[in-house]
Amino acid sequence: MRTALVIGTGLIGTSAALALTSRGVRVHLRDRDPDAPRTAAALGAGTEEPPEGPVDLAVVAVPPAYIAPTVAESQRRGDARAYVDVGSVKGGPRQDLVALGGDLSRYLGTHPLSGRERSGPLAATADLFEGRPWVLTPTAETDTEVLNLALELMALCRAVPVVMDADAHDRAVALVSHTPQLVSSLVAARLEGAEESAVRLAGQGIRDVTRIAASDPAMWVDILSANPGHVAEVLAEIAADLDETVRALRALQSSDEAKREGGVAGIEAVLRRGNAGRERVPGKHGAAPAAYETVAVLITDRPGELARIFADAGRAGVNVEDVRIEHATGQQAGLVQLMVEPTAAPVLIAALRERGWSIRQ
Image (cartoon, rainbow, N blue to C red; front, side):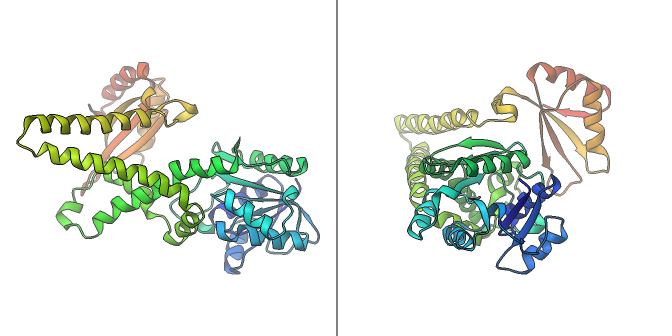
């Protein structure tokens, strides 16, 4: 790949353009908002100048509802040898492209599973896709050259290609991406009218659950509008679980011992199902999160503290597999949670205590 055209210079499009440009591809930028490609170009993502002829690959990075008309128009203009989109829904855009008379042999639907709460070109980074799954949904009509160019795009962005059927993809993202966004927003919405004294008690748990609730509502309306059926199915199952959980909690208030025992069993069942599901979420290198031991260390909010704790872990010969920071409300301190191999945890604890760190069990 020597040349590319990125249509849509938001977070995903600009990040792809930055990655391609950094690896020697000449990237042309296009967006219906003239300020967006100007900003992306200023960040080093490519040029606003139109290509002199067909580029090798056009990357369509627009909301799902606009994918099919954008691809169809770009194909009519003869912008590229091959066309891919990076939308989060795959089945609908392909069907719409067929209805518009688009050439499916030159088009491949893809979806990089990476993003941030922030949107727009200023949030873009060249390493956004590094090590992340990037789904391809080829069909029997997909030309081999198009598939190869899509794979080259992913290699240049250092993503991990995953081949899926379009409908299977849409069911999967409804479960692991689209529904979590709504659930996070629903929980965060409870905070809007809550008493200030309650909100001030917020800890890491509520921060974890509501992190993605900070996402752009307009963007998510576009995404959810393109995959409503699959998302509704998952939410209906969650709603049924919620109804059972409410009944179990009500039972705990009963004076009838048998009802209380049933309530306890119901709550324990949903918590254990949650444990089992959480263990299936892949962690670093595909390992389950439960495979690591957490070492919690009290840390003050001073320059160089994080660097010092990582250096001390390195001196102990311990590799930190993952890290989280739990901030203390109203204090210049917090807990750094270092995830390490279970056999390394005692070594790390001893080494950090020897160097004056306060370990919290």
